[in-house]
Amino acid sequence: MFNKIFNFTQNHTQFLYNNSLLLQNIDKFIYISILAVFAASTIFPSDYIGIIAVFTTFLTIIKLLFVKGEKLEATKAEIWLLAYFMIVVVSLAGSSLFMLSLKGFMKTFIYLGFYVSIAHFLKNNKDKIFPIFLTIGLCISFEGIMGFLQNFAHVEEISTWQDVSKLNPEEVMTRVYGTLKPYNPNLLGGYFVAGIPALYAVTAVFLTDKKYKSGIIAGIFALISSAALFLTGCRGSYIGMLVILGGTFLVSAKYLWQNYKAIYISIVGACIALITSAIIMSASLRARVLSMFAMRQDSSNSFRFNVYQSSFNMFKDNWLLGIGCGNRNFREIYGLYMRTGFDALSAYNIFLEIAVESGIFALIAFLCFIITTIGDGIKIILKSDNIKQVIYLSAAVISICALMIHGLVDTVFFRPQLQFIFWTMAAVVSCEHKKSDF
Image (cartoon, rainbow, N blue to C red):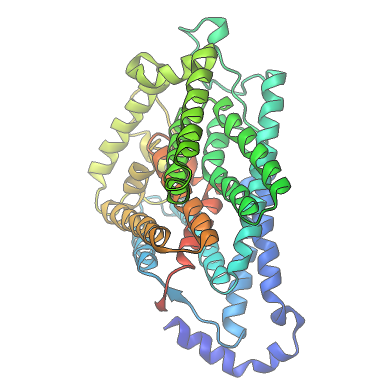
């Protein structure tokens, strides 16, 4: 249906394209706006990042309406995404707090609009995947350096970020938070989880192209950013980092196991030894890691368990269509279910959050989108002989998997800094697949 509309407008506005420098160079403007979204994510508040993303979507719509031959196409994964969006619309219509839910819905609309834009752009511009990954990598590197500087400066906490009641002074960690707004070490940790795979991919591409100097520099920044992730004190990102390292080792085995088995095992062993030594030698890091297993003995863990219980009760009472989108909507209704003294802005689990906001069928559709996207990426990784294609797809799949694991214990996933990287990774997988008309 949409493609018929686009075809009609394209046929009747050809003269506009022939006389417009904007339309003839619209891909360049879309490309610049995409890169601007990532650059802005490091320093600007959410509203400004969203405005740039909306502009990207606006340019894509203009392209579809006026550039001859442009049309929307969808993979199987994107059919699930469309189903998810339609269910969210129904959930919005049935929300008891419609205006608050509408604000949350608009954020979802902006994220999905950006995904459509970048997936459509990459379909015919796969050579731009590397510059996009490079931009993400530069932003991650910047935050990594800022993290180290904040650690050396022993920045003070802006809010209560860890339970220090049972810790000795040397076990209290300086939790870095970078420049992302709002300042939050969990947000920075999630940002590293989302973007570090892109930085690894950039390093691998440089080495594949035998640009060893650039590869070494990129590798150094990758190590700095990986180390800075641990300085955030975000325990969910620690688990996400294990997923990143595990995925990276599995993919690299495809090329190193047969001919460089000893080197491969040595590298894996060295990484395990390095991480283990860091945990053993650093009292603060050791205490932070062990707190994950303290269950309710740690106040942060206990807080999350209480929020999970209250959120699940919300879901049981609104399982079909949920309460509507958005953290403001969530907070208003959460007050009816929360345990005294345990106020929360979200469910601290992205899957539970989706179920609470939009119901069980939205959760199923979202899970099917994730599973299908990951499955499609893995199929190509296993079959492809194009090493760069494998690198890009591996980074995308690993990033998505790590974000989903991190999302089991936090909901910073819904912040724009993470969302735009996530949808970019999904678009990278999408652009590699044969598509059918929308």
